[in-house]
Image 1: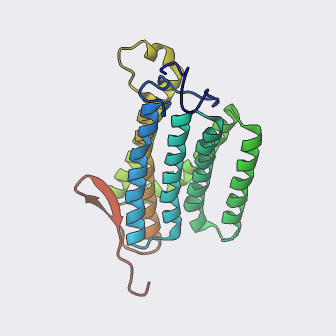
Image 2: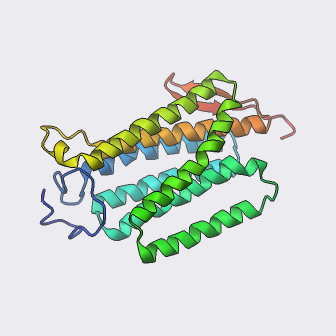
Image 3: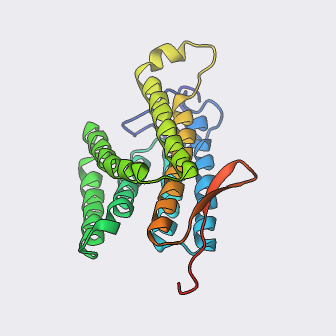
Length: 255
């Protein structure tokens, strides 16, 4: 099973494999660590979802946390099966999620309120159809990186206009987890041959999942703080059990 000769899902049909031995622990899970590492992201997204719903944040943040959960579930299915269909189920939500981040970041200053969500929705739908037919390889990665880069200037603008030290710490943690996670992904992809000869595989891609789960949580919490400040909800960053930060707001009685 470790060589993928016999498995529940059949031969590998995905175009990307990570530096983890296939079916080393289970007949039903192709990449064990890369699969279970997504559970952490689902848990953090669920915590963020509960906080957003309990304090009645705008629906965009409910959708954002649910999007994080869907992406993690899609990633689990992909790494568990290494099938081409499930690969698209992982990659397409990645693009959808970035489009959602773009909406949350840019919509407050967008004067034509209906045009942005309409355009982003149509863009995401067209991409899903085209991606299912053409199955982009390197083109998908370039496209995804461009979407990420488009979000950075706006995130930086929010950062420099935020004077709350706790909120700035969230942004710093967002940048740190993104940088460290990207390094884990890079070394897992580029130096797989060398890593495979080590006595213990550090599971760089699984670490990428864990760090990106934290990254999304910190980004979402920071954006919730910024949006609450825009709405005049007196946001402040507090900590659950002195470990996990979240945003606490006080809406005016008129709202």
